[in-house]
Image (cartoon, rainbow, N blue to C red):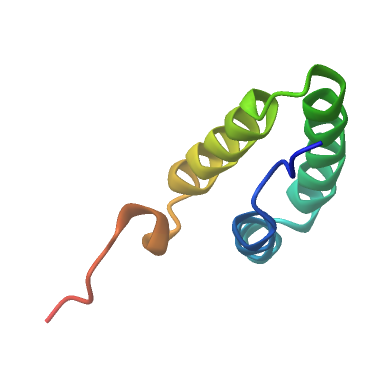
Length: 74
């Protein structure tokens, strides 16, 4: 079986989500576990790609500057 997911990306997303909202970090962990299980069950990376997309969207919507590629003003 080929490896699924991208642990460094998942870790970076989790760190960012945790900085924004600890309650959301719990949901992140639960959804990551579910996405991994679905990816393994279907032998597809699609559930993990969707998971990453969903949480990048969450971070961008929360106004986290790094997600928007914000530059320092001045």
